[in-house]
Amino acid sequence: MGESLQYREEDRLAAALELIERLGQPNLAFVPRMPSNNMLAAAMLAGDVSPERARRVWQAMLETAER
Image 1 (tube, rainbow, N blue to C red):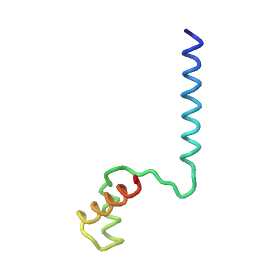
Image 2: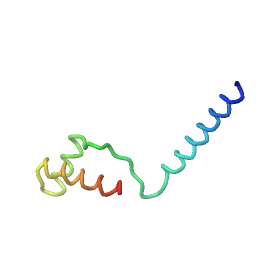
Image 3: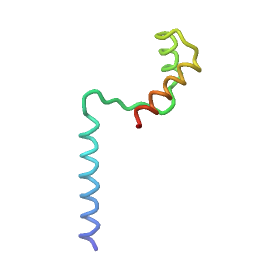
């Protein structure tokens, strides 16, 4: 049983390392599902839009990226 547990731990470590490697790909960014107030403020300034519109644009981009 000890070997079985050790194997699973090594498996998980290998999977975690592979994930970390994939996260380092160019043009890949990880962002929160909900924008922070600072993110909304930056969007408002950049696009001259309301906070609600900035939030809707954010959601639309995330939904499209998940397809």
